[in-house]
Structures are given as C-alpha cells and as structure tokens.
Amino acid sequence: KSFEAEFIKDFENLNFCKSTSTVCIEGNIGSGKSTLLNHFANSPHVEAIKEPLDKWCNLQGHNALELLYKDMKRWSFSFNTYVQLTRVQMHNFETQKPIRMIERSLHSTKHVFMENNRRTGILHEMEYAILDNWYEWLNETKQAEVDLIVYVRAPPEVSYQRITRRDRKEESGVPYEYIEALHELHEDWLIKQKHPVPCPVLVLDASCGLDDLKHLYEDKRPEILCGYH
Ligand code: DGT
Image (cartoon, rainbow, N blue to C red; front, side, top):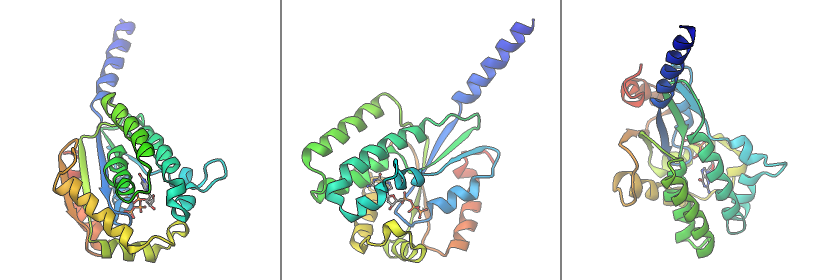
C-alpha cells in the first residue's frame, strides 16, 4: 500500500513538474527586465531565473562581457556561443514551481543580438551559420520552450538613459546607435513578427519612471503569472 501511495505521489510530482510554464521577459538593454523579475521573485509560484551576468563577467577569470564591448568583431562569436549555453541552462532549470520566469531567452539571442551582428558584419557568415545551426538544433530538440513572452517595451532614449545612469562598467562604451538598433530588432520580432514568435506576447509600456513600472507590473500580475497570483 505504501508503495502505491509513493507511486501516486511521484506521479503527481511528475505532473506538477510537467505543468511548469516558462515565461520569458524580453526587452532592450536597460528597459526594466530585472525590475520585473525582482518584483515577482518572492512569489511562491515563481522560480525567477536572472541572466547569469556573473558568469559572463567572470568566465574562468575572463570578463567576457567587457571583452565583447571592447572589440565586438573579435569576441561576438565566442560571447554568443557561451550565451547560448547559459540560455539553454535557464530554459531547462528544474523547478517544482508552476512558473519558471527567465530573463531573455535563446530566441532573443538569435533574433536580436545575432541578427544585429549578422547585419553589421560583426559576425562572419560562417560564424553566424555555426550559431544558427546550434539555434535550430536546440529549438528542434525542444530545449528552448517558452509559453509566454512579456515584452518590456521602452523607447531607445529611455533605455539608454537608464544604462547611463546605472553605469555598469562593462557597458560604458555602448553607443546610442546600438541601443536604437536593438530596439528596432525587438520591434521587428515581437511587434511586426517578422521572425517566428514561439508563443503569445504580452506587451508592457515601460516608458515610465521605475516606480510607476512597479505599479504597472503589479496591475498586470494575473496576465504575467498566467493566472497564478
Ligand atoms: P534590464 O534589467 O532591462 O536593464 O536588462 P539588463 O541590461 O540588465 O540585461 P540585458 O539582457 O539587456 O543585458 C545584459 C548585458 O548583456 C547587456 O550589455 C547586453 C548583453 N547581452 C545580453 N544577452 C545577449 C546576447 O544574447 N548576445 C549579446 N551579444 N549580448 C547580450
């Protein structure tokens, strides 16, 4: 009998795991994604998984993010290769909670960052092809599944102002034109849907101040948490 009870418990746990939804938070650099993640991080329903900036800034003693911005042409391929690995780890982070909330996804690495670097010639065609082959295979083998995208949408001027204000040392040389280009790529992907969008998109207007942002996130709690609140 106890075996039976254990079996039922395991089965319920299995179903519980399977019913975890992945919500990914997309938006430009400095748009307010971390504020959203922090806002919901304490909810009992949410496993909040931030971008592993610490790993990107200390990869066996190397600051990959800093190297990227110092010389994109030299480092974009290696940086994006490593980012792809850490993204897949985020998508597949095991949790018993019903919502796995992740900051960005494998899909924005492809449709925003890789696309930008392809267009500007920062990535060689062959480097792009290698990253793209990885992306396609990871996608086909269902290692980057997403149930909802929350697009934290801010004008590029607002994102740029926030980046300047927070003064992350690695981003000190990021030009406004880069933020503008990333904004257009988010718009092409998530609003104009010029590239495949893997799930429904909830668009949030994040052009307000940071305090108002928190109110906005609170108002949208039921949608963001797929009904759990
Ligand atoms: P937030 O909270 O909206 O201000 O977001 P951030 O700026 O903390 O986070 P995010 O994802 O926009 O970017 C952190 C840094 O990493 C930023 O300098 C851009 C860079 N980054 C993030 N993902 C990728 C990627 O897939 N490829 C490349 N090349 N860079 C990336």
